[in-house]
Length: 241
Image 1 (cartoon, helix red, strand yellow):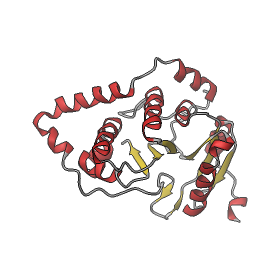
Image 2 (image 1 turned 60 degrees about the vertical axis):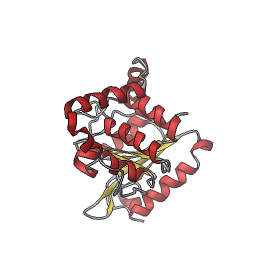
Image 3 (image 1 turned 180 degrees about the horizontal axis):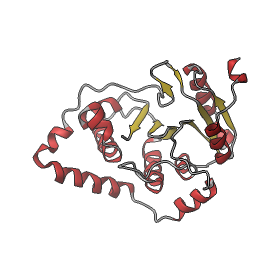
Image 4 (image 1 turned 90 degrees about the horizontal axis):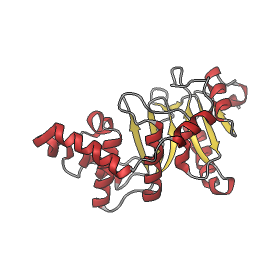
């Protein structure tokens, strides 16, 4: 009942206006179950509804330019030359291999000690164990990866630009069925299926490392550990410092 009496913040209203699609608002302090259940229900109905559900976490310092419309961003992203995701990954990985030289094997490590991720957590305030203020948007795109052309995310520090995310997202969707699910100021989560084949999991872990090295260097320590977690994970988590 509390949800009915909490007005969306200015930022939340701006995000919903910018997206211009059906949205369900969750004030800060909403239960994890409420947000998760709403997402799961929307996800189950996505094909019939012709949309992709995405949880947007509302933050005071979101990289959000209200002077640009979603239509402007779509024109910009789709006008950029297509990117071959495999070539993109290989280029980034080659650079890391050159930088680390003989130490590259230590970065890769052994495929062991992985901790599976099975629940979306990007919207969770770990201090209160409740949700941050967030919006569940039903973005009317035929292909899930097209959401990267709807909302400005990326293009700062080592976080890939929206144009790169679009084609990488397309590649991961077609190869693994991965669907963007949560977007915050600096976190991106995908809903996916566990990669049971160990060789395929290691290949994906290398791609994810190229996409977001922080999940290894400031997270699981080795690419092998990340690969081990992917064999049991239904959520892919990315975070850029």
